[in-house]
Image (tube, rainbow, N blue to C red; front, side, top):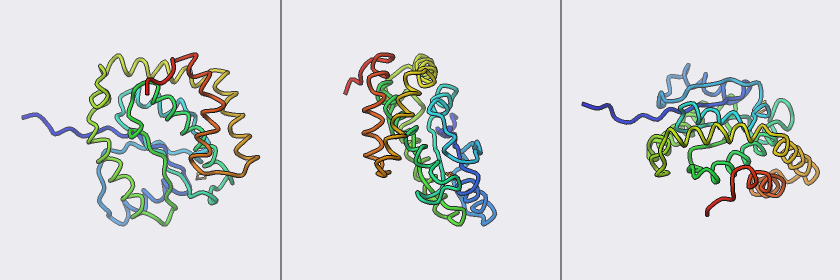
Length: 203
Ligand code: FES
């Protein structure tokens, strides 16, 4: 009998908040799906947009980034810069035809073990409902993972880097850290370079 599908989820968790929340959830014996494999980072500000793409290219079906709540980053504004990187990941996924629901960035403080459990349980269900990478997309998984690996390379390119730096700079200047505002900045500064490298989104 075949095993029921169980998604592979890769998590990038900030040491000070979300990783500690996950740890305290474990210590408190809260139950949550065992699908998450964790990479601990000191701050989500370290997230390079190529990391989640590499994760998908190498077998993950979903990627979770967890950090401190806005205004509570231990390095002041790292999580705002993570939102810039996350927007680029979303822009890239749209161009690849990958469901944006496979990628999530959210916050949980060190004291919020139950909140972490809620977030990761809901995300695991969401990714499970999409099936293995490629299924909900109607794309052949091997070829799709290859294209995602190429997209990770593109995300490391000079043009995209420059666009991201400019988007971050504008974000800091404006003081508007809302997700729609940041997504708008990233689209403005990076969409042209992404279109040149990958083609415009079909939607
Ligand atoms: S230290 Fe947690 S997001 Fe920066």
